[in-house]
Amino acid sequence: MHDLNAMYLFAKVVDHGGYTAAARALGMQTSKISRHVADLEKSLGVRLLNRTTRRMSLTDVGQTFYQHCAALVAEAQAATEIIDRTRSVPQGTVRMSCPVPLLETDVAAIVSRYLLDNPLVRVQIDATSRRVNVIEEGIDIALRVRRPPLEDSGLAMRPLSDTTGVLVCSPRLFGRRPRPRHPNELAELPTLDMATATDRYTWEFRAPGGEEISVTHVPRLLTDDFATQRHAALAGVGIALLPYFMVREGLAAGLLEQLLPDFGSPESLVHAVFPSRRGLVPAVRALLDALASGFDRPSGPSRATIASRTGSTAS
Image 1 (cartoon, helix red, strand yellow):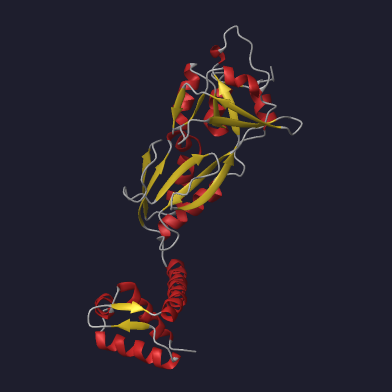
Image 2 (tube, rainbow, N blue to C red):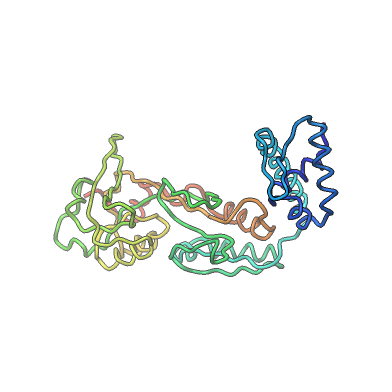
């Protein structure tokens, strides 16, 4: 096997764009790094780098070899991180953002238990329903609730819980008007929905017999925030399809009622996003683990249980 140290140094030369920059980053002499790479080329019997007085570039075989060396370096760093985590106690400050309804229902209790178990950790929570910029705002963990498919944000993601979608409205929305008996009737009623990049808004349902039903509607309110939809539904503005955990108290108190309980609707995914899986400090990793274990999958009872608890029936 070839010298692993030389392969590491070769990868670092490529990463930093030259011998001098690599030497500066590693705290080594340029001549020593150059000698290691030259010995590696000699042992391989190929040229890996094209070198002139002004620039350096990879040969074709050097490009292929570099990809494997970079993977080797990444695996070595990951192995070291595993050992470091086992030797480190969670400590320091963790910054987290969380939608207010989710914080009120599940997350506050989970974080409290986590803090009791980890006395050296401080948690700073931004209780907000806006979509935070994790990288620019220095957020370690952002909790989100979205209906799949999730857009690719470029962030690492960890699923926490599936939550049942429930079609709800204020009892006073209808007054003396009859409630809908079939999803197709929703297109003629005031609705609320999540804003999207398109002008088409569709709800998907599954009939008791398994038939898939797609309902296109024109929402009176569009927002990227479930909490705003819930407030509008409570106020009687329209019908919303919301995660069960956000409406269970309103249903129990009679402030909201469930519509079409016999028709299944898509679930929403409660998930955590964070900058990267690599290099997570123990405090952040431990909080992610606490959140994952603190949520039940799925979140919320079955549709039949919801109806029995609220006294809802298909009407």
